[in-house]
Image 1 (tube, rainbow, N blue to C red):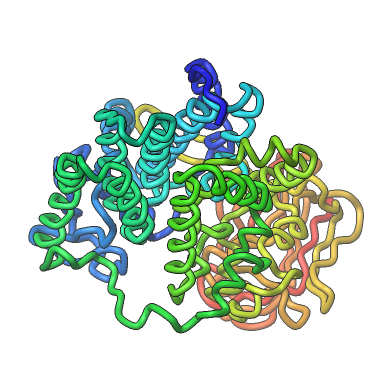
Image 2 (cartoon, rainbow, N blue to C red):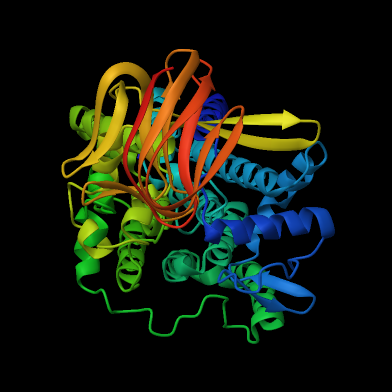
Length: 546
């Protein structure tokens, strides 16, 4: 490998660019998993404890503990993020929105730091442009991007793995007989910390650690002692809160093997979760890794560790990663898989550029469109197994077809932060009438409504626009200011709710209805129709002049 002086300025550029893009959508995209980790970080920052208040006994992501509840997930990601929560808490209230904002900020900082370390490491063996491009493709063209939208475990594990690989790479450039104490100890500690942050990565981390011990056989004692420190702390934590050193929060019984071997194909080629579909630049990364495996022992170790992690994840029944965008559960192996991406791009620059553009475009699409509506229609609704293999219903196709762009706009009033999600349909149809049909949502008439969209779990079903949850909605943005009449035709046993800037109108209904509401609208004002109670079947909504 060509050896160059590492470029600190390049690392800074990589950090600034990746962090800026990671937070540019202005909103957190979290889940129940991330809520538990974020709430733990907030508890550490505000009360100095891992224990959460006993506010929700039915929360599946926490367990009962002395004095409250405890997250089922590892403590290290929350502990690493706690300083961000503490600093943000000095100027803002850590209310639920503030906690989400702090979680996303912490995750983005961790991933941007990993990107900077990777760019710094790449700069030792590639040109500045190639090193920076490779690092940014890692951050912005893979599920590193999607898992940086909230405080998942992955950003912390990725950061520690990148640090470990950088140290191992530095050792590779020296003769095996030469012991470089600092990078060896850094690698041992970082590998152990990655396993502590993400228990699912333990097999992969064990393979990396065995490679380190094999390389440094005469001097394994200090390496083992350093690696034992995080392991002992995790064992003490597990014993305290889960009953034994080897027990982690999530239950593991009956959660392996049921989806195998379909999961192998799914992790690679599923339209909803496949690595090759969402991150085709991984093919160039894999080619670079295999090519370098013929030359260096480190690359051979990375091949083995990557294959081990892939095999482990493929045995997991929920190989699709639950509510997430793309192959989330493969995020942890990305530092290893992409470590020789510069070498791959050097050999296949044009193909790499094409696949890289696709990979980044997919992640940006998810960052500005994904809001779990796909899961509410399929995973929580119906036909999720079929949706995993449907090109027509894949998250990518679904996002393009619906065309709804979501830009988060944080608003701060005093110490309180509120997040407003501005939804738009840039390439959508304008009209004055929207109605459900057998072919889907049909928009027609004079241009009085734009950005017409279905929200949350709203679906077109048997010609009806169907809303079954109080948060489901049909929304539009008024084009012209002034008075008008909003006519709604449908069926509901419950309370019909119309939300606009001037307030909310609640109308009890007892069956079929045809109501005409006088409205006063500003240009660009959002109007949302929901069912406060009951299941709403909306046949038509129209906006006319008064």
